[in-house]
Amino acid sequence: MRLVVVFILAFFAGNAYSADAADGKGYQLETIAGGLNYPWCVAFLPNGDFLLSMRSGELRRVSAEGQVGEPLANTPPTYVKSQGGYFDVMLDPGFVDNQIIYLSFAHGSKKANATRIVRARLGDTQLHDVTPIYTVEPTKDTPTHYGGRMVFLNDGTIAMTTGDGFQYREASQDPFSQLGKIIRINNDGSVPADNPFADGNKGDPYVYSLGHRSPQGLVYDAESDVLYMHEHGPKGGDEVNIVQAGKNYGWPATSHGVNYTGARVSPYKELPGIEAPIKVWTPSIAPSGLALYQGDVFPQWRGGLFVGALKFKQVHRLSLKDGKVSNEDIMFEELGVRIRDVRTGPDGLLYILTDSKKGKLIRVKP
Image (cartoon, rainbow, N blue to C red):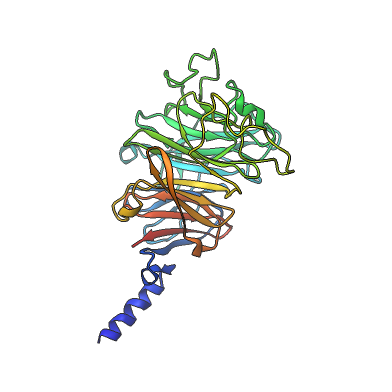
């Protein structure tokens, strides 16, 4: 009888994506849904369902059981080209009562495009009252380096990353440009009165921090009021930073990487007045997606940052101590696919989106 029980348990464990309890990892990877067209972000609905944005320009509900719904109607048009398309989708803190969501995406055309945020009310099959609340200025004519990651801060304001547009790197150091920045807005798109340049005299009122290249990771620790972000370097020099209001994070005045031609971006890796990253990767891992694990299901991971890696098809877990990275572990290499997003769910589990035309939503559980 004991052998029969063991066989049955092994059979069901094998139907998860990976049965790692057997090899000592202490987790298993369960595919919730597949066949997703370049998924970019997953948000968690109160009823246990998921809301997914696709870079292809779709929003879809996925049921708690893994059934993928049809694309929601009345979604905003987007510029789908290279890195352009839909980016983050985020629930309003009062979602249970107001059903409000926020969506960031590439807006515009080949000659003039920019990252935009719309606010809308989520219905069963469509969006209602779709209202643009913020669009990055100036526009650009490149389909790359959009940023687009969003978080709510404790005071109800929204922070979002913006990229430098690849060919407009000098704009990252211009406080009057919204390219290569983290911007901060109220939930209606207006400027918070305590933004670093709110009066517009020394910089653009929307700018919260500057000197960023292509930031595709943003997460907020509400308990300690710390904002973390990561960004792609050029050839080498990917960074994790702790973001503070009005601070300069260097690009392209400082960089740990070089141009794709091999030429130097800058002779400096650090300069006075430039905030140093808490982590640098050279060679680049192409980071995308960032989660702070604060759940109880995996107590050994609590307080760590999880960084998706597009290039090496893995997730990096960074342990933190006194605001610095104390240890780094490579995880989930068994997936063997590009990682687009990593999130902590309200159930204390970790969720991963893979980056492909047939992307998957994967749950990490004991």
